[in-house]
Image (cartoon, rainbow, N blue to C red):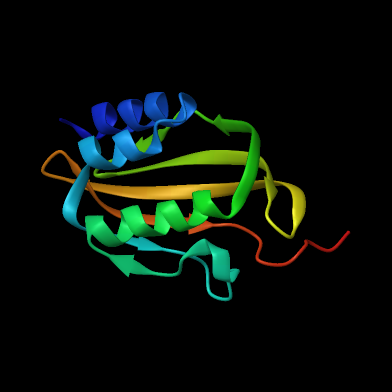
Amino acid sequence: MKTEQVAARLVELCRAGKFEEAQSELYADDAVSLEPEGSPQGAGGNVKGLAAIRAKSHQFHDSVEAFHGVTCTDPVVAGGWFSIVMGVDATYKGAGRIAMSEICVYQVRDGKIVHEQFFYDVEAPAA
């Protein structure tokens, strides 16, 4: 698949809440996943390999009591890279309801996602 096709499929699956299916179908076995420096412990940190990415995803989902909504923009593609903005409104165990937004950047090689990196505020933004 070309980058545009991978991006469109990822958005389709994310909008349907099928994150695990997206990982199984679209990610390379040696993909890496990066969080911002100083990100909260529940974010799972930086990991390498599809098994570690799945474990990170399960850790995130285990921290959630209830999802109230997930949004995902159309992708912006440049060569082998694409980005989306994802929003998650969820009630987290011990933290209450939080709505957050992040920029997600992906690299595609040989039809598979090999790199994902997330950008979001790790502290509340100044007013």
